[in-house]
Length: 163
Image 1 (tube, rainbow, N blue to C red):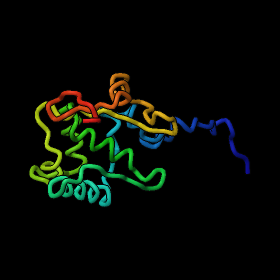
Image 2 (image 1 turned 45 degrees about the horizontal axis):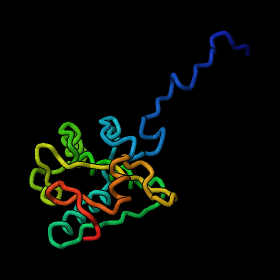
Image 3 (image 1 turned 30 degrees about the vertical axis):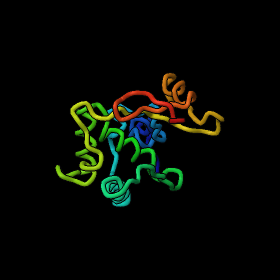
């Protein structure tokens, strides 16, 4: 049996297979924050939603304000952090997109705990690594103030941590 080879021109794999952006690389909070396309394809698993609900309840019912998220590489910690930043940040388009993706009802515990005004929260992405300073991507002004031992108070003023 004979076959005609001239009809079997191989196609490039890239013309046949399309890989969604979220599978091409890991999420990077410092570079992906504020990007609407960074939220595309996010699927909020029940454990992630439970984590946000648990944090919201702790914020509302206790004085707890510091949280640690742990899990394996690729477990979705940075993606969820990016989603939370988008949910409370200053961009109303991103806030609404995050609300839709998380399927948040209007009066959720998450809304009550992380209430936003029209302008949203000032979200400052700080990414750590093994450097002594511990601040890899913080903006220069934030690095300056943190190194000087200062923090921002509730009236949007910088105060010394020594007080």
